[in-house]
Length: 520
Figure 1: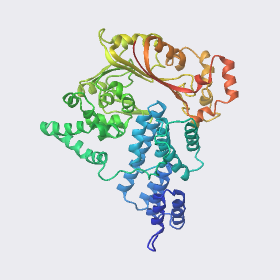
Figure 2 (figure 1 turned 180 degrees about the vertical axis):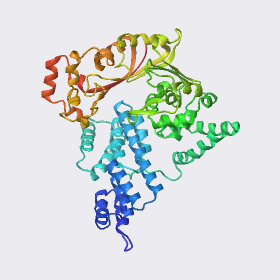
Figure 3 (figure 1 turned 90 degrees about the vertical axis):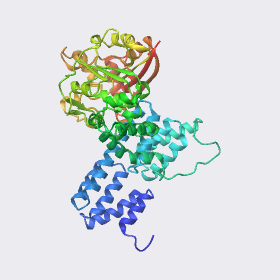
Figure 4 (figure 1 turned 180 degrees about the horizontal axis):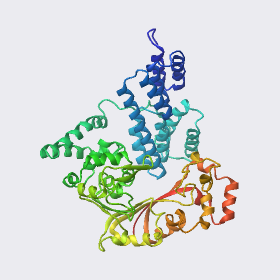
């Protein structure tokens, strides 16, 4: 340390050395004397961003802007928080669905932003799920040095030790002590970093060339297709430029991809979260024809083409073909897509949208993949639909569905969706919270949402129907979070068992199931 070091420089170095709490004390001392010190506010925002308190970081960045920090720097910081937060959420969803490799890819990419230690926490979860115990241990040790009381981190540490005690795979040669590594940042000369740095200019040049310079457009498309390996580990569900690149890189036919290319629609698909599900099941839909049963507002089609699907057919009896209103899946509210389903079909000829039911399909229509995303719990004829889908599959096709369990804590599809949203004493919350929706369901009128929109099928029943009719490739049960488990007390469980003694803790704690199956 030199005499020229200012307190903010010392704080910056402490943060770089992973001593955020010491850095925070120094910055807070400055702000006690000068609350409007924009540079100290920027440093404080960065520290709390690293600690994972994203709301506080956003607020502090805003205060820094009001106190004189450059607007473009603040906007860049806020965009970084938004991106990392989405990546963490996507990775958590992948881990819930049993796709640890995809979660690892997302988090490895997010880690390069050097934004938040929460990335490393969840990366440790991914490494643990992949059996890389030493890598997981190293990450969680670094995290616990900064936040020794963090419950999830301590739980992960206990599981790592338990697996090591059982002789689990360490990912290191026996007898060797792994070297301590610093947090991985992008290295100069890293091909992935160079690709991502060049990508925005390439996409802009491609968008300009399309329709004006066919040869130049082809040249940019070929460059993107040669970079598909970089894209597979990029988070193209959350970045518009990466999604546009994926549209060409993963497509079976470049000419066909160009014919279906709508950059504005791809950007909206990213913004509203319509590429996350296609990305999760990409292995089963790339270069294949896809039928999406219960497709909702018709906005998933572009996401499946970005994932490499050859064609997409979406069918839903409640899809208005002339309305641009869709659900923003990230914010869980309605939004304007800017185009209607009819206009989507005009712009993207390999997207076909049908206002109707399965029986409205052409009698000889078959597909390589039939997907249902959070639809199986709504279909009252689900016991017939699952077996009948066999007639819609090509010989090597797959049935893929994500089923939300009616008997889990939020199986009612109403508020509160999570325990932290529950307000005891609020009548509409008390009616359904803590599995009360199960108790009231039999006495509700026929026109109640539970009876008109939820089939209330048991988890084992839908599983048995699937196993009876298909060879199941993957069946993953996604547990509810710890906050839900804490609410399933012995008293609550006894009350539910008193109502229906066939209910098990599994019935009540499995939030969803992901199934991939093929014809027998």
